Image 1 (tube, rainbow, N blue to C red):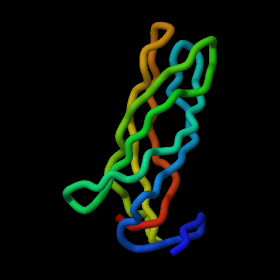
Image 2: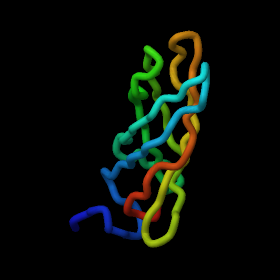
Image 3: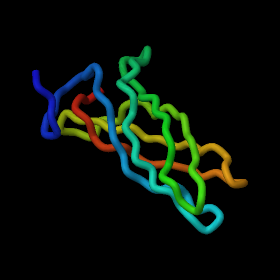
Length: 111
């Protein structure tokens, strides 16, 4: 089965990932943009899955921040798709850190 942006399916789709484009919290009078693509799905004992992600936010105000995080379990949004919630802090650089929270882009699969 070919999976693309318009695909919808019920159940778990192995090997999928999610993308997101968001901004960090405001700290020290600036924000960073965060462009992220998760690692493939990690099944959980309850039949759902989570995603691991790590990377850097974009350079701003003379510095960057690094992050490593896991998402929430899958949240079905209907139409055979799901999203994940994330809420984490970046590394401390230049004497501060930023919070990143939100929902990633929908992916095929309801679990």
